[in-house]
Each structure stands twice: as C-alpha cells, then as structure tokens.
Image 1 (cartoon, rainbow, N blue to C red):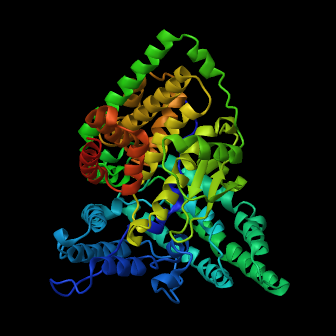
Image 2: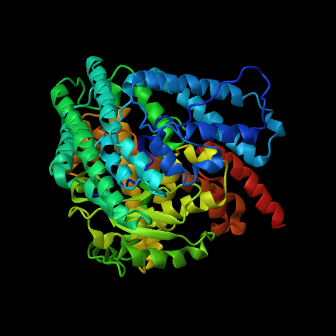
Image 3: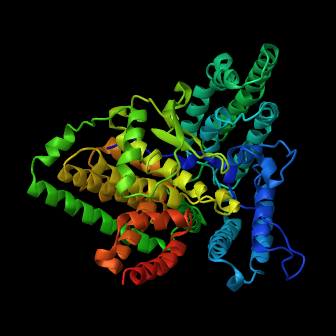
Length: 584
C-alpha cells in the first residue's frame, strides 16, 4: 500500500475559509449598487475577517480600500458559526435580488457559483456540533505552524501585525478546546486513536521550546527584509521568541491537555453514520468537499465502475505485455530533484495545456517537528494580486520515497495546483471567487494531471498506462472505503471483507480503516473530483469526436475556474456547441 496517506496540499487556506463567505444584509428589494461593485464590497469586507486570510489573499489591501484592518485570528465557537450562517442567509437574499438576465456571462458565472455555495452552506446549521476543526493531517493544529511560518512580510508593518497576531493563538485554541468539550458533552467527541494522533503531533511540536520551528524561520525571514536596522531585528527576534514560547506553545499544550482529559468520552469508534445525524452530516461533507451534486448512491456506482474498469485495464496490459509488472516494481524516474522536475514539466505540458505567465517557485522542506503529520508535499496558494512567487513544501519523512516524487511535483506544481492557481489569477476573475474553496475542483484537477504526468515521465505507453490505471483503481478503492465506513456503516470486519480481493494484510486494513475514520470525506475530495473531470472529458470527446482537442478542453476548464461540477457541466454544453459551430 502506498503510505502516502493524503496528497494534501489543501492549498493551505485552512481555517482561513472555514465557513467561506459570510454575507451582507440588504434593507429593501432593490440593490443599491451594480453587481460587480456589490461583489467587490463583499470581498473587501470578508477578506479582513481574520488577519491570516487577509495576508494570504492580498499583498496590497489598500488597492481594495482596506486600511488599518483589525488584527485578529478569528473565533472558533458555535456562536460565531451561527453568526456566519445568519449573515450568509442575508447575503444570499441580497444576491437573489439582482436581475440575472441583465448580468454579463462572467457575472452570471459568479452568481451561480455563489448562490449554490451559500445554499449548501445554509444546511450546516443542522450540524454545527458535528463540525470538527481538528484532524491529524488537515486540522487547524496541523496546518497552523506552516501558515504562521509563511506569513508574508511585504513591509515592516506586516512584521508588527504578525507579532500582534501570535499572542491571540492561545485564546483561539482555548475556544477550540471549549468546542471540543461541548462535543464531548453531546457524545460527539473523536475516538481515542484520533485523539492520540493529534496529541502526539502537539507533543512533537512543543518538544524543543527554545528552538521551536517558528523561532528560527522568523529570524531567517528577517534577514531577507530590507531596511531593518540591527537593533530593530534584535527587538523583533526577542518579541517573536517571547510570543512563541509564551503564547503559541502554551496553546498547543492546552490543546494536548484538553484532548487527554476528554479521551474516553467518545461514543463511536466507527463511521459518522453511527451518530444520530451522522449520515446526513456525511452527505453534507461530501457535497462540500467534492463539489459534486450527485447523491452518494450514484457516486458509489461511479467508484465501482472506475475500480472495475481500471482493474480490467491492468489485466489487459499485463496480458499484452507480461514484463510490465516487473518493470513497474523496479521503476525509477530519470528526474528526482524537485526544481529540475518543475523546469522539465514547464516545457513538457505545453502540448496539452495553455500557457501561463512565467512565475517563480521556491522549494522548501517541512520542519522535522511536523514531518510525521503532514503530507508528502503541499503548495501554498499565493495572494490574488501577487502570484509571482510560489512555494512548494516537500516532506522528507523517511516513509515517503522522494525518488518517486515526479508525479507529486506534477500534482503540486505543473500542471497541478501552482499552474491552475496562477492561470486563474492571471485571468483576473471577480475577487470574491478567490475566497471560495472548491476542494473537488482543486484536488480533482491536481489528481487528474498527476495521473496524466505518468505519460511525461519517459516511460513506455504500457508502463504509463499501467501506472495511471493502478493509481485510479487505488483512489476509487479508498473513496469507496470512505463511503462504506461513513455512509453504509462498515465495521473493521466489513471493511476487511470488502477488501479481501485486493488486500489481505490485517495491519494494512486497520491502517486504512483508521485513516478514513480520522478525516471523513477527505479522499473523495480527490477521487470524486478526479472522476468528475474524467466524466466531463469523456462527454466532451463523445460529443465532439475528431473535433475534440485536449488543449482546448483544458483551457475551457481552466477558464471556468474553481466551481461546482454541475455548473461546469452546464457551461460545457455551451462550449461544445461553440466548438461545433466554429468548425463547420
């Protein structure tokens, strides 16, 4: 089994966008501003709801009329969630007052995306107590150190803001702990194995307090800042060290202590559907995470078809070329250096993907204290008004084979997350769309091009086809497990029975089961997203026949940008008609 538990980039907007757009109320039935002005005003309001979101979204907030924003890390309470949902309802009501027919095509796209997103968000109100901000890989406590480490210092004032932000981490974690206590009282606390994983992560992070990751990296960043005097640098270093040791680390210690106290209060060691409203909550998570409007029974059929189709492909390839399996077992990539892979892929993708502006990409490595709990690699989404400098983090955890990192770099870099993010920003979409999170599109695209990249790695077609089919089959299998466990209620024994034709090792089965329990609906974000893109491609190929051009299809998907798949499919019908008309 591939130990690469999750490909996670999660493009690291983390809790920044936990509940997406909040909203603005209207006093009457007639909008008082044009649609674009309305969207820009909402963006300017919402992007400064917390300082991390603002810093990661805009390099120049003043351009959007944002001056002297409040320094805040935000809140994590049931009341803050309820307030967000109430504001979202008002925002949706305002949105619906606009005359749809009078909007431009781009405005209609923004309207459709926002409307569907907010309507889905409203249903969270039934599941507030089920919400979970913690998780071994995608949880706030896992992502926050990297977000703080990469906080952008564009000017001296950004350093001052950062140092005002750090002391707030303790109170933020205090709210998370209170939320977890409420979950415990409601019988909804995580199981002990998940808690242990998060506790171990916290222990590792706070182990060497005086040499904490956030101290050293801050000092390194100061050396890159121009205009600071030695006296200023020394004062900043002292302030940061004090905040890390006396605020950030105590926050992690508090979380660790709280989880240890709450261990044993969980009432469910299996999937979400074993909770009273767990099945309905899982349906909500699937819709949010995948961007697919299909009901879960239909998604299960898609996964079953993908699994059987790709298993058949594997058998067909091995029958035709028996040497393929041995070749794959001893496979080696000619390129293993991340920077060299990026430079190669920039050129290799030109045949099937439209051009993007030339941008820089820095390769950084995950700190040792975070290696056990973060993914093999991750990409940090750049600000929408400053996307020239991009960062990919590589995890040197010995469990991850970096000699096989070629396709991971394709996933995170070209033509994956970096490429898609830069393309989208270069088209200057409505700013509000940069605040909306569509993991199914983002991770589905990155998974789709990751599998495509096997055909760029210098392997024979049989080997590349085998690797692609094998990965697609594995992904379908993992997604099917996720739905079986959380929607159908599979026990560990049920899971083993389902896997009997694929995996028989009991420790591997237990690892897979626990992985799905830890973070429900995570794998489907990748796997269902991938299958939705493949379905779009298959439909386009069928409709256009010899008029289908892969590069043009990719351009269509990239031009639409992150969105729900039913909206993309509707736009594709028009795109197909346009292509047919143009080629008559």
